[in-house]
Each structure stands twice: as C-alpha cells, then as structure tokens.
Length: 297
Image (cartoon, rainbow, N blue to C red):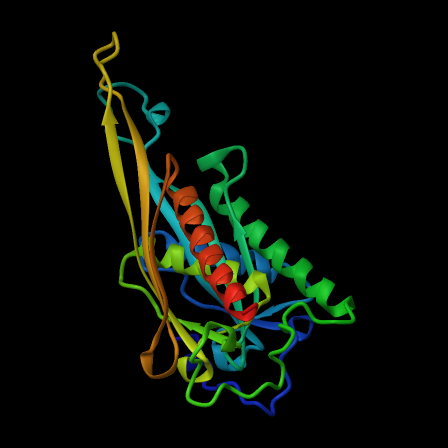
C-alpha cells in the first residue's frame, strides 16, 4: 500500500535512500480501530515539534512515510464515579503500544521503532507513546547523518539486482515483501512487529512492493483471550486470570509461489501486546535460523 501511495519502486541502478537524508515525513493511517486516528494525530504533533523534520499532508511531498500500527483500547475508571447512582464516566483512551516503520520513496524500509506506555499507564499512555516514537525516530535520523555507513542500507542489497524470476532457495533472498494480513488488528500488530524484527536482523532488505522482492512472506495470525475462572472472593466478586494466545502460521514463498518455508507457532502471555511481541520474535527467529542454515550448506 505504501509503495502504491509513493508511486515508485526499487530499481537496481537507483542509489539506496539514506535515513539521514529524510527531512519531510508523511504519517499514514496507523490502523482502523477506534482511537487510532487520535493516536496518529498525537504522533504528528510530536514530530511537528522537531526542528529537523517537516510533516507533510501527502506521501507525494514526503521523503518517507511513517506506517505501521498502534493499539488503542478504551476503558472505564471506577474512581471517576461520584457515587453508585451516577452514570458511568466517559471511557478513556489507552494506548497499549505502537509498532511503526519508516518507508522511503522507493518502498524500502529505512527504520523501525516500538513504544509502550510509561509508568502512569492509561493516564499518560497516548502522549508517552507518541513522544517515544518521535524521539526514537529523530535520534535514529541524527545518528545516521553522522555515521560513515548508513544504518538503513542493508549490506549486500544496495544496487544488487533482483534474483531472476525470484528466489528458489532461502539463501537467495535479498529483498523480502510481506503480504498485508486480514482485517483484524491483532494480525496487523504481529505483522508490523515481525517486519521490524526481520529488518533489524539486517540479513535482507524489507520492501513494500511484491514486484521488488525475491520472496514473499505471509502470516495468518490472531490473538485469542482465554480466561481461567477462580473462586469468588469474600466481597462476592468473581475473578479470572486471562491469558492471550497469539497463534501464527507463516509461509515463505519464492519463485512462482514455490514454498520455501512453512511453520506454525503459539505464544502465550498474560498481556496481549507482549503475546504478540513474543509471537513475532519467535517467527523471526525461525525464519532467520532457516535462512542461515541454508546459507551455510
């Protein structure tokens, strides 16, 4: 989608875009769930305070686009009630986390970052997460400006032509495209985190357009809550422990949709965002291990 918005694609002759040269940024939609637009505006506001960056209103005017997903939930706070007879208080927006990536004009991923709420939880979550994302991105850009070797250019991929007709072995992969998930927000969270972990490995470039890739990755993911009831307490309230089961089925396809790798995994945690993170980390580890084994043969 980002590559479509930018209207460009990678070419073997074009020099790779450097993170340190980014000055104009467009912030794309960060999810479709209620509250995600509010979170996007918070991030825009934080980025707008940085003197080194300019926020633009369309991808065509930008050096790079900030994309990804934020998880926003709404919850009541009983302490807001004046008495038992009052109406329930308005729900407060609570950001449980953000996983975003910066995509250059060519559709090449330049940067990845995550953020979670601070110590005050729901009371400062939106502002804290937005500030964390803006700060991390700004610092990464400044570091890349000073570095002799760009952190956004993966060794071995700059100026390297695509494998003719696509990869036929895992070791052939130089540029990887990951298909968008289903409409469920949980699947997009795992996708965003998996892309980030693969990007941070610096084993290959991550692209936003399938035609610019040697291989295509797909992940069918979902997060399911499982409650374990316990006995009632003395005040008559029933309590339950909730576990979040993050399930993922991963397929890596090469030339002509030839299967190169396929596996299933399940990660469980009491926190939804952490369960998704563990699923993405485990999936990335499985992929990178398989590629390393194939390259060492």
